[in-house]
Amino acid sequence: MESFIAQVINGLATGSIYALIVLGMNLLVLVRDIVHQGYAHIIMITMAAGWITLNTSGGNIAMAIAVMVVVGVLVTMATEPLFRPLCKRGAQLETIVLAMSVGIILTEFMSQFVNSGGNFAFPASMRGGGITLTFGLIRLSLANIIALISAVVVALVLLWFMHKTQQGRAIRAMAQNLRVAKMLGIPFGMTGMIGFGIAGFLAAIIAILIIMTIGTCGPSLGDTFAVKSVILMLFAGMGNLKGGLLSALFMGLIEAMALAYLPGSWTQAIFYGVIMLVIIWKPNGLFGTAK
Image 1 (cartoon, rainbow, N blue to C red):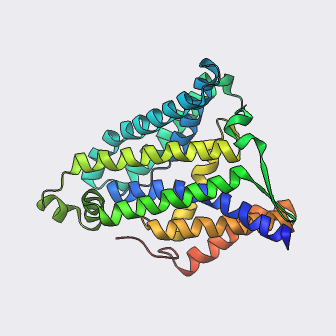
Image 2 (cartoon, one colour; image 1 turned 135 degrees about the vertical axis):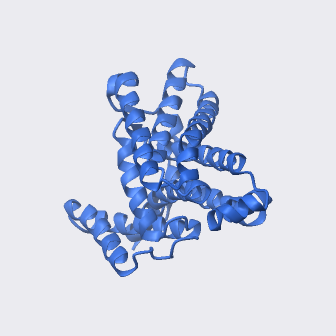
Image 3 (spheres, rainbow, N blue to C red; image 1 turned 30 degrees about the vertical axis):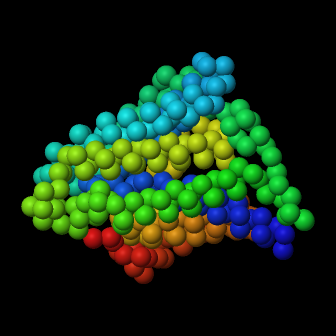
């Protein structure tokens, strides 16, 4: 029983990382109606910026976090003008190609200029110090607990922003009917930049949580998270913030249970098998497309 509870917490912690990535990507769906596959690669670059800062500042964690926030926001916002003309023309296929290109360029940048293209690890001081909490016979990683709690808090704040603030309602209005939103005076360019900026800040938070829970990064990390995150978006329903959150947590739980109680080779088969069945059953996603 104790092992089962520990696996539940670990699964939810893993799912919480995917949940935040899916939230960020779904936010960009609402802002520009794009599937920004390069978003996961921006998270990867943000982690690299933190690692470089740690090495050049004598291990200054506060400076590394500040640099990660700046890089996450600026790089994400820098991609918005690239998508804007395509979105105005409704060129959805071209936006997919552009998003893939962003991911490829960032991956190549990592391969050429960061640690000679090799994987790199973060110090224990940024991974919760390896602290394990014991509750009776249950042993839980402090990093996983912090990641899970942080993800829930960030998700709730983002949902509150989207439903209770004027800017959040403007983003939702653009997602529902762009032409009417423009007629009501909602600025297309400024609203998009704000949405991308929020997604960039979220990317920095995700990068920090990945450092705490996984502790390593490399050129392949962006591809790994991009594939699963896009599939989870389809699983939940494009642009559905709440659905993406719940679906990612659920699939993280499924993955952890499969890894704990089944041969390792079955883990990915079960993960993608469940998603495949849901997409066949409900092509618009388990919770429906947010439009």
